[in-house]
Image (cartoon, rainbow, N blue to C red; front, side):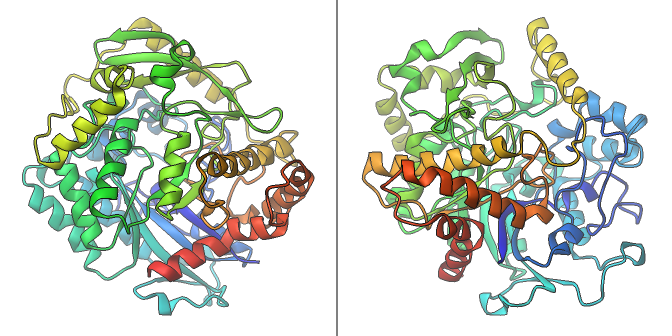
Length: 527
C-alpha cells in the first residue's frame, strides 16, 4: 500500500546551522539524546525516513523560511549556547534574526539543501533518489525507489523584498513568480504563518515560544494580500486557509466564490474547533473571561467534547469551524489532517482551559451582534480596494508587551514541555491517539450531513506537519509508521462503523482513500 503526505518539512532542520557545509543533510536523522523536550526536535520526515519503508513515493514538500519572530526567542538562544549546540548555532540564529540573511536567501538555502545529493556519511543506496515533478506524467506510481515531490509554500513573508518588508509589491510578486517559473509543480500557497505579515491577519498558533512576536495584528486581508492571492491563482497555485485568522478566512471565502469559484480550497494540516463560528456571538457564555489588553484580546475556551467518547477538539480559531469545512468541501478542496497532538485536541485533559489571542479589531467584529453583516461590508470594501486593516506591522524593535500573567503561563508551558520525555515501545496512549484522528473523520462526515453536501471521503488525506516542530501523536510519530497507523485506524474504524449506518464505505475503503488515493486523484485532476 502507498502513502502520501500533504504537508511535511524535511528541509526545515537543515537551516539552523551555518549554511557552509556544516548544516545537516536533509537525508540525515536528528536525534537529540537527552530528549529534554520529548520528540519535538527529533526528525520525523528526513528524506531517509520518507524512503525507509518503501511505501511512500509521493509527498507535498513544504518550503518555509522561519520568521524572525519565531527565531528571536530566549529558549532557542539558550539552547544554541548550551545543550543543543549540535543542532542550533548562535551564529546562524543571529544571522537570521538581524537580517544578515533575508527570507529570500533562507528560502534559497532550504531549496538548495533539499536539492543536494546524499553525503557519503548518509549511507543512502544509490538507487534511492528524489524527483521534483515538473509534469504529472513524470510520476511513476510503481517506483518506490524514487520520492516524487510537489511543493507547497508556507508563509507570505517568504517573498518579502529588501529588509524583509514589502517595499514594492510587484517585486514581491516577482519573487513568488521566479520560483513558480522554475517549472516545478507547486500545489498551494499558505499566506499566513505564526507571526504577523503584511498580507493577512493570522490565527494565534504558538506552540512553545514567547507570545509577544506571535500575536495576531490587524483585521482580515490587506491590499498586498489580495494581490498575492490573485497572482497565485493566475499561476494555478491554490490557496491554503491554514493559519489564516477566522475573519481572514471568511473574507477569503467570499472573494474566492465571487472571482475564482472553480479553484478548490486547501486546508493543509488542520484540526477541528468542534464548534460553529457563530459561537462568538450566539453562545457568548462559552467565552471565558475575555480581557482587553494593550496587544489585543486574551480569552479562554473550554475544550469541546469530541464525537467519540473520551476525545476532545482543540477550540482555538487556528482550527476549523463547521462552516469552514462546508466551504472547503463545497469547493471540492482537500483537507489534510494534522498529526500534531495539540491541534487534534489531545495534549491536555478534558476540562483544561485553553488560551487564545485576537487582535482588537477582529475580536470586536466577531462578537458584534451584526458580525455577518460587518464581514460582508469588510469584504465589499476589500473588493473595491478600500481596505483598512488596522495595525498589521510587527514591531521588532519594541515587541508587544506581556504582563506577569502571560509570563507565568509561558513559564508553566515551558516546564510542561521540558517535563516530557521520549516514549519508547507501544505507548498506553496509542489507541487514544488513533481515536483522536478518527474523531475528526467522523465529525467531518457529520458536518456534511448537517449542510446537505456530499460525504467527505474523497476529500481527506494526511497533512502531518512532520518536522514542523510538532509533538506528533504516538500512533504516527514519523513517516516510517504510516503502514502501522493505517492498520490501527482500520481496526478502530471497523469497531465504530456500526454506530454510523449512514457511512456506506468499509473501513478499508475509507483508510485507503485517506492515506493515498484521494491525494493521488486530486493531483491527477489538477496537474
